[in-house]
Image (tube, rainbow, N blue to C red):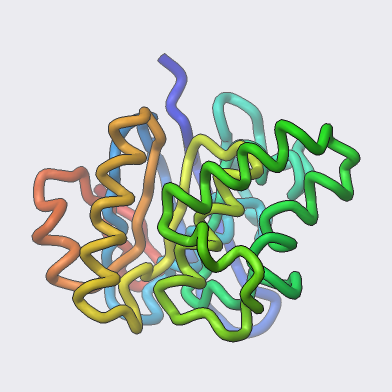
Length: 219
């Protein structure tokens, strides 16, 4: 079976500075949660941006379901892989919750009936149904995070890459997040979670782990 995400012989250098990220070989399986751990500044977010196509490797390649990210646009990658930023508000730009969910599908002239039905289902599922007319500016941190995940799923992504998803969340919202991750795994979604939070690591203690230390990626 082709891995959901495959990284091989990857080398990345920023234009400025001497930071170097290397990853000889790495695979992420569909239907499995993988933890990505390491100290602050070790290269975890750089690795995530390379996997999601935001950054392009200096050498080597990243494949998503067997296709090189070099041959895919960010829009095409987003239909397969969804990336949740550390600060979800960075990827929310519409005025209200409902507009956030339906803006891109309507822009692409997708059929309104099925689009609206899917958006309604996702908002209800993630506890945001009563907030559809609320400004995204007035959402709590946990609500913004759940909305960002909803928009990722709205786009059709079957693999999610979450960057420090528990940062800034209280215990109640962390518990909600863990339940969402459990449900997504049961649906067969692939998930990679960047974290240094012991609670999350212990919660998914049986998950495979990728370690990033000083720009070197290892299992």
